[in-house]
Structure formats: C-alpha cells, structure tokens
Amino acid sequence: MRPRTLPTALLALVALPGALVLGGCSSKCPVPIAYDEATLKDIQKELGALPKDSILRAVMHDYEMERDDLRFCR
Image (cartoon, rainbow, N blue to C red; front, side):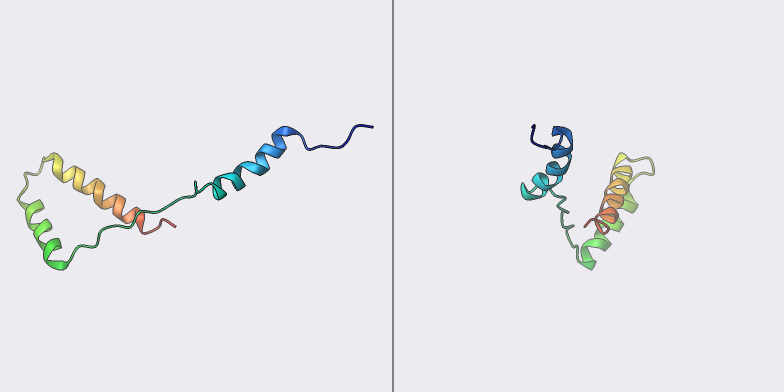
C-alpha cells in the first residue's frame, strides 16, 4: 500500500508564505523624514520660485504622493 502524501504543488503553496515570513521577506515600510516648520516654509518658497513648467515641480509632486502613501504602509 502506498503512503498518503500531499501533492508537491499543494505543499509548496502552503510552505511558501511561511518561508517568506520566516526568511524576513515581509513588507518593511520606510520611515519618512520629518522636516521642521522652518524647512517646510523654505521648501514652499523655493518651489514657488520655480518656473511653472519645471521638471522639479513634477518630481516634488511625485515625492509628496509617495510620502502620503507611506502613511498607509504597515
């Protein structure tokens, strides 16, 4: 009589999440840098001085969106 075994695919499906967690491959959220009020005011002033079509405006907008997303990372 042949012993009962789990199919290899099912075993892999069950083992993979556990291996990822034990191996340290879980999600790690970076901590955003906290700027003081004086720095935030300087940033706003410098951004306001940029031309309306400056690529730096677009990049800073992307950066702002990423920082907002970090608040929801767990």
